[in-house]
Image (cartoon, rainbow, N blue to C red; front, side, top):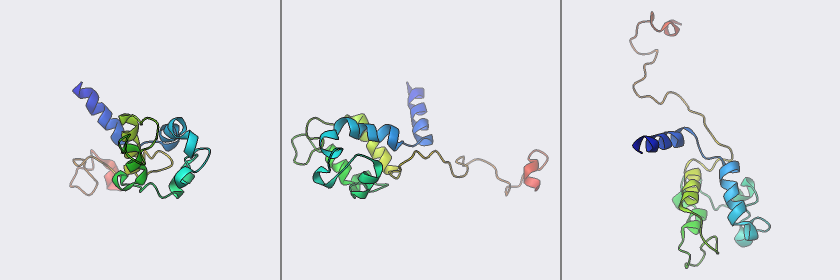
Length: 136
C-alpha cells in the first residue's frame, strides 16, 4: 500500500492536471443547468476562456479563489455550489490541484532542469573520460 501511495505522489509530481480532460468534464456534469447554457452569477463554465475571464480563479492559489470557496461551502450555506448536491472530495481536490498548478488550459509536463539534487553537472570536478560531453 505504501508503494502505491508513493507511485501516486510521483505521478502527481510529474504530470499536471489537464483542464480539458479532467476539469471541464466536472463542470459539464455538475454545473450545466446554470453555468454552461448561461452565465448565472456572472460565471460561464462553457470553456476555459469564459471561466478565466470571470475572475473567480486565482492561478496558483486555490484558497484565494472564489470558485474553490463556493464548491467547498457546506450544502446548507448560502452560495454553496452546486446548489443540488456536492462535488466529491476527489473532484474538489483535483480542482484545487489544477488551480495551485497555475490553472493552465493545457497540461504542462515540462520539467525545467534536473530535479535530482545529487546529480552531477559539467561544472563539477569530474573525469571527462567517463563524461566526455563535459569536455566540450
